[in-house]
Image (cartoon, rainbow, N blue to C red; front, side, top):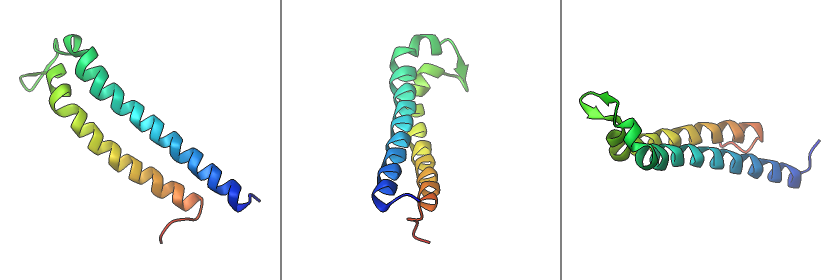
Length: 87
């Protein structure tokens, strides 16, 4: 069985892993799709709007809000796994 110190280290390693993955996704959506790939994405139209424009104006915001909910869900699971949940 792991000691309390080992549990804390494992908990924070997993937490940082989640953060890095989610921030990487946000970076790809906001910077990659909204700036770097905007010309390629602008060839696609959805609802009359160019897809690159949509990512630059709305997509990164929507993805950030979704990522917040994903992070909360992941952290609730992690808290239960390490028995530090509030329930």
